Each structure stands twice: as structure tokens, then as C-alpha cells.
Figure 1 (cartoon, rainbow, N blue to C red):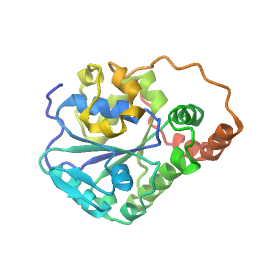
Figure 2 (cartoon, rainbow, N blue to C red):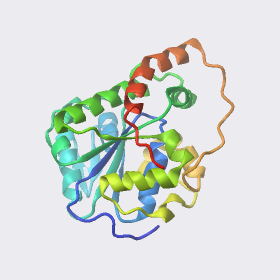
Figure 3 (cartoon, rainbow, N blue to C red):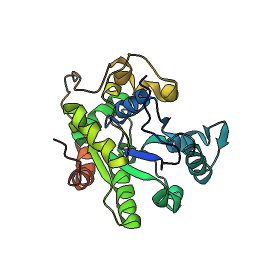
Length: 245
């Protein structure tokens, strides 16, 4: 782990909202490797699924409590959390602190690849679970409430040019760029043990970069329908994606 001083106390927490299977856990793994951030894995989806989430020794049972705990934790060590949009977060979106006190960023991936990857793990995934529609709704709400266009990164751009993309992301959110954090040792992380079956590719990886893809199967009608539903939401977000040199 790379110790640096880019995550100063009292800096606003950074949220990365991502459609499932967009390579967001690989990005979180790089944030873990920095060593200067309090990195939290999918707190609000865990809350939605389990009814609670623990932060700093406190058990939170509502979105308001959880947001307060993340803000409090960031007073001593800057918080980075990523969450996926296979759930709706209506209560959270009604909380002004989300827009006033956090930096909200977003992550996408080309839907045909994201859907195919999702269905390999969960063949029964619903249209809502794919997540692009929910992701777009959060993006629009953040833009409406803040008057600014949030930062969007594309997972395909990230693995094609990790150095430039991570450097540009860090510049936008006020973090020091740490090139050594783009490489790591293989293995699981306690942060995502609950959902480890979704993160096997990251556990086998040694850094950000393109990994060999499984030979795709021809998409069936249901897979095509899922892609067709979510493509417009991806396209709308893609129009705002970060382009790094």
C-alpha cells in the first residue's frame, strides 16, 4: 500500500456512483492502494439489501444515518465510497447533504458488455438491476441541485488508458495522483467479502488495464431487450464522459 498525503481531513467525501459491471470495483481497488483514504465499498446498496451498514464502529439503519456517518468519518480521513445503482436511493436523493457536502462522480460502461457480464453472474437480473436508468436519474438530480455537470468516467476508457484517466479524475476531485496505486497484489479484500462472487476478476488482477475477455455468447432476446432499454441512459451519460489525453 502506498502512503501519501492526498486525502486531507475535512475534505468532502467522494462518491462514485456506478452501474453494476462497469469496472467500478477495480477503480475502488486503486483507491484502496493509495493508503490515504477511508475507502467504503457499496454502503447504500448494503443498507438496502441488509437493512444496516457499519461505519467507524457505528451501525447505521437508515440512509440519513449512513450519510451522516460517512460525513463524520471524512473529518479525520477523507472518505471515498463507491456504490452501484441496482437499487433506488430515493430517501438519500431527498437529503440536501448529498449535494451540498459530497463530490458525486459517475461511472459507466458500454451496455452490451455490462449486461452480458451481469447475466453471467445473475441470469435472473431484472431490468432495474442493470442500473443505467437509476444512474442517469442520480446524475440528473445532482446536476439539477448543484447547477454543475458531474464528472463521468467510462470503464472502457479507464482500462484502455488508466494512467491518464486516474490522473484526470484525481485532479477533478482534489486528490494527489499516485501512479504506484495502479498496481497491486492479487487477492480478496475485506471491504467486498459480502459480494465477492461479483469481484473475482479484480481479485485475480494486479492492476488497472484491459483483461482478456471471455468469448461472448450470442445474446438472446432478453439480453438484447435489456441492452436496448438501458442504451439511451448510457448514451446520455457518455456525452459528458471525461476525456483524458
